[in-house]
Image (cartoon, rainbow, N blue to C red):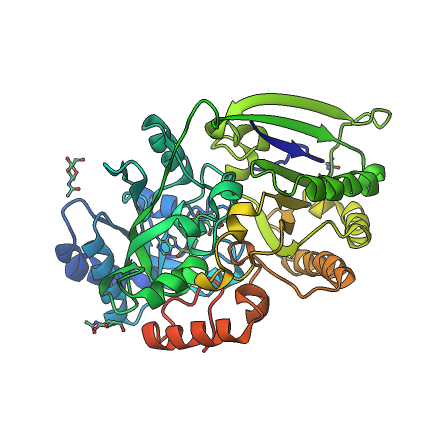
Length: 473
Ligand SMILES: Cc1cc2nc3c(=O)[nH]c(=O)nc-3n(C[C@H](O)[C@H](O)[C@H](O)COP(=O)(O)OP(=O)(O)OC[C@H]3O[C@@H](n4cnc5c(N)ncnc54)[C@H](O)[C@@H]3O)c2cc1C
Ligand SMILES: *[C@@H]1O[C@H](CO)[C@@H](O)[C@H](O)[C@H]1NC(C)=O
Ligand SMILES: *[C@@H]1O[C@H](CO)[C@@H](O)[C@H](O)[C@H]1NC(C)=O
Ligand SMILES: *[C@@H]1O[C@H](CO)[C@@H](O)[C@H](O)[C@H]1NC(C)=O
């Protein structure tokens, strides 16, 4: 049986807020999109203009910080729709951006201005192949749909923890999830993909077709194209492997050192246990009784479908609510750097009240499956750090003055931990803030960056896919 042990957790407040953009500047382009682009699209595709509900829905993102701005949203249904939308944007010299789960949050997304949004959510089919060990999904599918559809067919695969993120974009940056200890990253499951390139041409990407791109999309994929569908490995779920035991423990901050020490020991001792995962969340809880230790203790027995809810990562949970500004500062670690985390904890505990919903998270999944894939075989650079940590700064987006303050605190807390660990920063590209070095995002071995830069120059010479931690050539 697999199990999840969780450290310090608590409630997170969230609320929603509508965003309205001034549409006047763009009226000429709107007219053009309707007259020129619409006739080229498949019958079920739609074009949404700023005052429409569809437009607002597509614009409604997880974080209210550095959001992309669009003049028009193209709701695509087929691969050819994606190609046509890209070609149209190129002709108009407009920026474009794929939108799936809307949970991307790097600052580069805010560089999209007057863009064409390519809204993928209708391309969400999930089909298990007859061989029983592979499946195909559309480019806009959300995580929950993949989990549920595979489950129905007696299958499961490596998938992220959160129900409402896209399933494809995480895989393009590596993709961490529950079953990675056994099977590797989300990216390691990819068998092939259809990819619409910067010039609108669609190609098949696999070990035998464009193998250079196949290497690149498994870790740096957002830089190279829009995936319209993806084939990936799936596995049988069986009575032996489908149950998960989960335990949640909450401790007061005075116990930080003890808890982290214990977790370091646990990681050493159970290094080879493929389905032992743990998360720690360090955050403010308003109502706790400090006399208890642990302050609270819950246990659950569930399956892959049920792991999201206790972590508040289900569709109704806090992690899926939109409306706050979230800034993430990721860093990897091979163990808990207790000294550095104490400094960061003390900073967190002393944050001004307007930032007191911020937290520090650490995801500790088994690395067995991840490390059994040769490091040079994909663009994903970090197969050695077993902890995926991040500072999350959270605040009300109405208070713009907080943007800079939150960024400074976030950077400082991350720096405190990384500096005191003595290792270089490894920043998971899917959590990146956006100011990390190329090496921190894509790897310190010079051949990696060389290779990525050459591929970028070849396939995206004009930097059309430069809004998600771009590879600079
Ligand atoms: C609450 C939460 C939980 C998370 N949990 C995990 C986790 O467990 N494991 C993990 O690895 N990551 C996790 N992440 C990080 C996640 O991988 C990224 O946030 C990812 O960008 C989300 O993808 P999306 O489709 O939801 O977002 P979007 O903002 O729609 O897309 C993100 C980026 O990918 C591009 N993109 C979207 N669809 C496609 C496509 N079909 N082809 C090419 N490019 C595309 C977009 O243009 C954008 O640049 C989590 C994030 C959040 C906010
Ligand atoms: C278009 O939508 C209709 C109604 O939902 C559906 O029956 C049809 O199969 C769709 N066509 C395509 C090409 O997706
Ligand atoms: C955070 O600060 C606000 C005041 O801005 C206060 O009302 C709230 O209780 C604090 N939250 C926690 C968890 O301490
Ligand atoms: C688009 O780019 C790809 C890769 O560089 C190239 O092979 C293809 O010929 C280009 N298509 C067009 C229509 O120029």
